[in-house]
Length: 532
Image 1: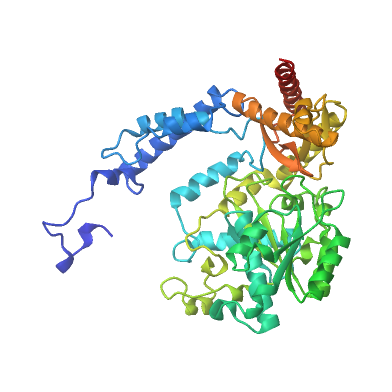
Image 2: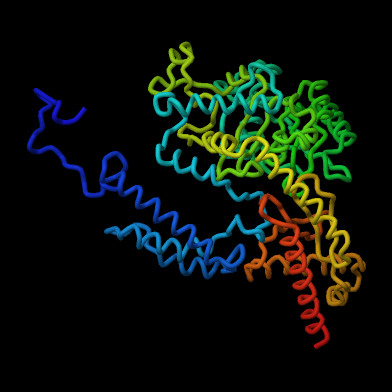
């Protein structure tokens, strides 16, 4: 209704406030809409120009230089500048020194190049700015998220009655799974409603089990849940870096004999370093035998479910009580976009609450989808739109082809590493991560001289650590390749994390050659210093 339709006591008054000039910076009228179109065009040009002028995945600027330069930027100026000038500053001082995830040389982390359909969806969801906590804030968005969640439950072969919610990623999904697991166990085992009465005295003996290669968020969740990191019992892995079943059986028997209360078993479908997938079916058996909550962290490997060829890797995941999957990894979505899936949707009762101004109980009775009851967050973005648009634009087969390609690429580069004497493959790739190291040509004589009682192999380890860490740092500083760093059995290693379907085997061979070149240079420089 316009002001022309107002009558009586609501007729305009001479002292009414008038909109400020900055109101033109908002959508909703011709002036705002025109300003939006111009802003989007300028932002697009700024982004594309940064790609066009880039040389490699990173400019190589160190953190001290960045901090010194960016500290000079004003955050809260009294008066604003034209958007064109602000975006120019952003382009020069921020985008120019950002890691370019689309570059074939960016192979460090589980940090994907987002698909263009997802970027289009990001524009729509940001512009509409709906919050997924109550239906009256996001009507169609709430219903579409439910539809996407249902499709995801079907994808993982969950039964009727399964449910879920979109999350910011694996950290939130893992926390949700373990929160529900804790409260379910305390209710069924100790008749304790944790939501209202808090933790029972027996909580000091609650334990959850996961592999030694599981994501650190299991420990983080235990801390946040009031159990403490000591409640996490890590189980050794086998030769394939998967949770060792024999060690798990021994661990569970020991915990039982000590009077502890194991309440959850966490399986990993795609470890961060190796992409290893735990034996999910066998873990499901153990969880069922001991009445444990079985949660699967499938943030990385859950994407296999979309591929007919890779899907068997996830055998047994349909028996998990809960699953966390990230769309901003191998599903090519902008950060952050994940989902938490619950095999028995009724178990959301351990989390739900009602607020009269947001999700009153009468809405529940009427079936109104106020999704706040499924999340640990209140305000939440319409992130379900991104995978919806992407899958409808590329098709299931199109996305699966990209995932299969990077997994095949990992196998190919692993073969190249095995064939190169200067390199050592640390583990056969299970998904699209390849862990390896440069193998120095000599032991570290200086280290042996400094510690004559040290065993030769320890000195060799020192040389491997020093050279591989230096290789990674030098490559980042030169902006040639962005590699990940890790440790394998206590020794430094390098990692290629392959997510980009535009990366080729030749790109990776160039990266490996750079590793070798830098390694040889570092060794020569060290020899010169030692002989001086």
